[in-house]
Image (cartoon, rainbow, N blue to C red):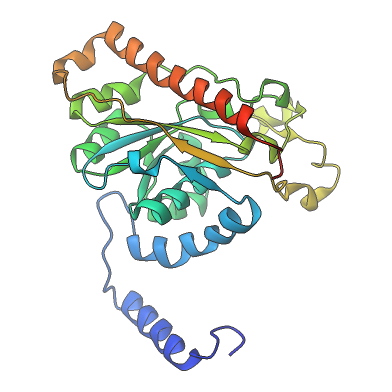
Length: 282
């Protein structure tokens, strides 16, 4: 009763039936390894309290997410640890009913345990081939083009967008004709204020950086608890790409112009949200 409440018998029976089906192999996993049932029942359920109670995520412009069909969500990236991607996946699912299929960095798929969990949650490698196949298949795909430069930037450079790479995400959208939805996230910059780095140790461990924050490593494991900043997620108006021919995805000037448009839209929205924010923590 402590775990399941007054309806403990029914809920326990449902849980037992669920695990029986799983053990018998009666479930569906797509070609990328995505397990929708596990993602909804466990991953989303575990992350939801963090999003709603700890970060108090407020979502705006969710109507700009298409109800069906392929679309590419492009977001700024920050926070030292990429919790912003996880919170975005929860926010999209809970407010639109769709699963956001994230494009992850190589490092994600080199880590034991993390790699398998990421696959089951719908993440795939950030490469044009997988992105185009997903978009053409009608999936909602998320990309964070700043990469490690975004989440690993010093606190003094917070909310200043880094380079968006070579615009590979734009090429994928142009080839498939799907809309690009810019997303601006405010609040993630403050969860782990990055004040230093240990590059020698980072190279030794094969990771992009070893963060130093006001609380880590000084407070040990306690320093890994993120600060409870208030988050704002605003989805901007979709940028249409269906007016272009697929061959135009090979035009570097067009790709650069669209990439710059997406980046500038996100940056200006960040400035607007920061002006509207009353406080970091409320």
